Amino acid sequence: ERAIAIGEKTLGPEHPDLATRLNNYAEFLRAQGRLRDAAPLYERAIAIGEKTLGPEHPDLATRLNNYAEFLRAQGRLRDAAPLYERAIAIG
Image 1 (cartoon, rainbow, N blue to C red):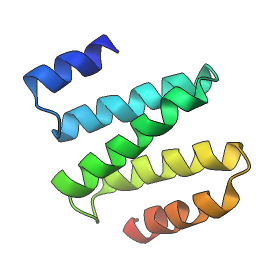
Image 2 (image 1 turned 120 degrees about the vertical axis):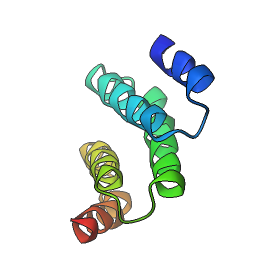
Image 3 (image 1 turned 60 degrees about the horizontal axis):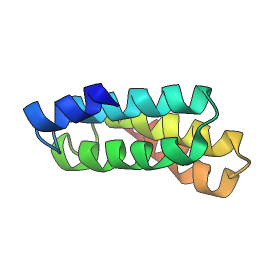
Image 4 (image 1 turned 135 degrees about the horizontal axis):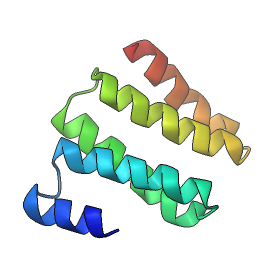
């Protein structure tokens, strides 16, 4: 959490490196079973990536895939499928 707060302050709230930190922390929270805390971080990381990197960037594909895995693990296959499809289309 501290790294995210520092990143927001030093990089700005929509910097691609902040999105990477958000995604990584979401993965950490997922591993701890803190699913409610992880979901908004995945979503924010994706939103920042779409805005700053563009819809075809490989880093965005990674974030989409991570969030899809998160959703799949919860049995939310209908929500996960379009994210997987976007990640695959990006390559």
